[in-house]
Length: 183
View 1 (tube, one colour):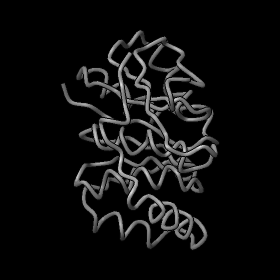
View 2 (cartoon, rainbow, N blue to C red):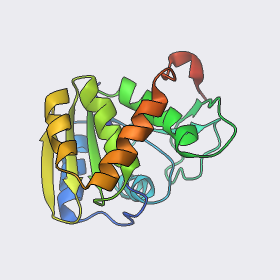
View 3 (cartoon, rainbow, N blue to C red):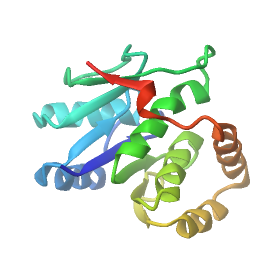
View 4 (cartoon, rainbow, N blue to C red):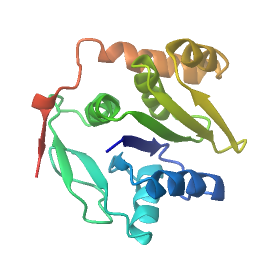
């Protein structure tokens, strides 16, 4: 079964019709969905999938303690080696979702460095990402590292700097199966 990583910005609290249609296409094809447990887009995606009664969902949570699991789906417990609950702490699960998915759908508020980092993680592995930009209503298809670099280069300098800093901090901290367990 093909797996899609769906995620997005914490400031995105509701899914517009464009995003719901994209998710409907994913569920109509019975793709597996991996999603995080954060407030914002993760929670909105979970709510939508739960209302549709979609069963093929796995929620990735740090140390198995989910902040949100609306559909009571299976949980992937991802161990984080970090103690401080910062970006890198939660990015551990994002790296694993990007590794396991064949494609991604990211919902971006135009500011979130975390969402852009997920696009970069997927694109650097040659995986296609549909990036829905909430502020413009446009969907950008990114399928290669060069497309990712071109997109990132057009982003505001502050967002670009935060993404680059966060991705640089990950070097030497790859996600692995040994960090995760299913229960």
